[in-house]
Length: 386
Image (cartoon, rainbow, N blue to C red; front, side):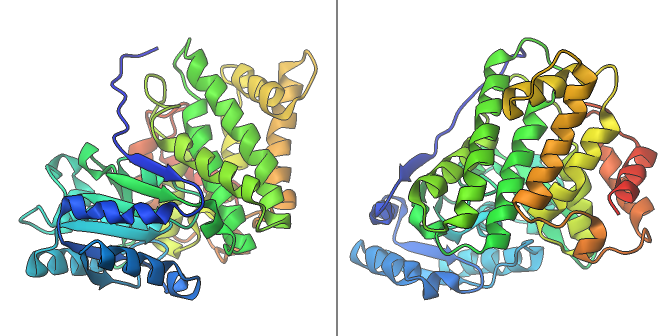
């Protein structure tokens, strides 16, 4: 196991009614920028409740609305300008990972003299950020408890991740009831997203990281159990609660510090989103089984067989048979059980027109992954996913 430093400074208030803790924003000042997406928080009452609590706490609120599912740098820039011109003290995101990601880069941009896109392209330029708070409404990305953010510039077909310790939220409210109204499609995509985070950390060249691997397996079993329940019973509190908490732990460092390699499927999916603006979790679900099959080899078969035995409960002594069955089980779960689109054509990608350019960009980040992939490998995976 490698050396590492593990720190999660985010205070989590988990459960029903925990939004009352928004009164604690007063400790960071009197002016908050409220960041949210398309307005669902107004329909479900979270918006009014948040404004009431903040008002009673003496916190003035400015609003940055309309954050996109793949948040745009143009929206970030609007938020940064508001923070600087209005003397904002803190940023509060109410929504899913896209909203929280946008809020993070807004908070960092408010403390930076240049263009916020600089902070996306070069994370070393992030030196400080306004305090960040979040109220989570979608279980998927884990952004409520990690240091990362992903921002797009669709005018350039670019989608990049950035990260810094100061981007970890000061406090996050996780109320599973806020996810009851999440659609079947987004519930399924969110489950695929959190599973992909876990896979990216689980498949590693590092030897001896038993704690991290066993944690990953427990998270995957939890997701596999509760994802279908949430689809069938949208207001099942325990299913929603377990998905919400599992998503946070998939990416907060618990299962990655000391063991994880650079991620592989995410960089490939980011290119799909950058060029085609597809739903992130759906893209991950499409690519993951294809990637698994592509990298299965003499060197990796033992890891995939272990995955099959410990996550899917497969039995047998032949590692190759177990590994193939595990990959098949993964496909079946995503595409049949969860009803996710099974290939790129199903999300509107019917041509390989951009694959060469996309693969060249993705390969910059996949070359040191669990199984290193070059440009040609990535093109092959994209084509196999058609």
